[in-house]
Image (cartoon, rainbow, N blue to C red):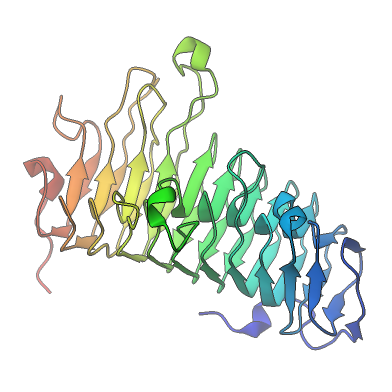
Amino acid sequence: MAGADIGAGTGTTPAAVVVCGQEITVDTTLDGDLACDTGPGLIIAADNVTLDLGGFSVSGTGPGAMDGPGILFRHVTGSTVQNGTVTRFGAGVAITGGSANLVANLTVADNVGTRDGDFGDGIVITGSADNRIQANTVLRNGPYSGISLVEAATANVISDNVVTDNNMLPGDPRAARQTMGIRIEGPGADRNSVTDNTVTGSGADGIVVLGTCVHPDTGCVGSPANEYNVISANMSHDNGTSGRGCGIRLFAVPPSVVPAHNTITDNVADNNTTHGVSIDAGGAANEGPPANTITANRAHGNGEFDGFDGNTAPACGTNTWSANAFGTVNQPCVAGDPAPSP
């Protein structure tokens, strides 16, 4: 875990009185808890500023808060939010546009959007690049995910977070089939890094890269895939509380364009309801080979298979599996080369 020094301005800005809906345009440190009946709670509206919550909380207090995020980065670059709690909004933190922002050392909890609303995640990056989501605790958010990358969210780093129990309605996990721990949705969400996170208790999959379909009238042909993402050194256990869910999955429902050229390496995925590490079959909409690489992962005790590839003609398609340590696999190509001896 990174320490508090990863954000700019820590300990240098006097505490400030702020009000709900305020636009933050200079370095600001809260002087107390903030309760808001609508979202966004606070808006970071300038480049290169730090919003330090000072250990306090920004909370939504009613149904109106579900319509927006607690903290909104609005088309800014190089800004930071850190050190506090964001809870009970439609999303905890939303980065929209801009680039190179930092979300660090927050607890983002109990942010639940509506099924027909624009939000439903703990932390969401939309159409933004080069951001860092680092050393946060993200729990009990939904109905979509703990951390989400949508539209052309590129070259973002998701690292050292604890992402747990994101199953939308903890009292009724069957209602949370879509809720994922860390979700790369796109389309065109490329070159992101998901590393050193711990993901547990998700309603569906722990860490997932989705297929895309922005042209359903053509059977999804021409939709940009989510490509060249790296999922490494994560622990993804005990996911699938709704009844189905994998530890790590490249997920595509036909005829969507499946994720391509992604790397899954050095992860541990145990005791998930369905598979440990899972790759869905490619479909006719793919304009090029998926060519994903799955190497040096470990998985045991999963409900169906520890390693699974849905491509069977040919076996494993163009995906490369090697040096993994799986207890069970659905076809020999998933075992790949034997794992090296310890």
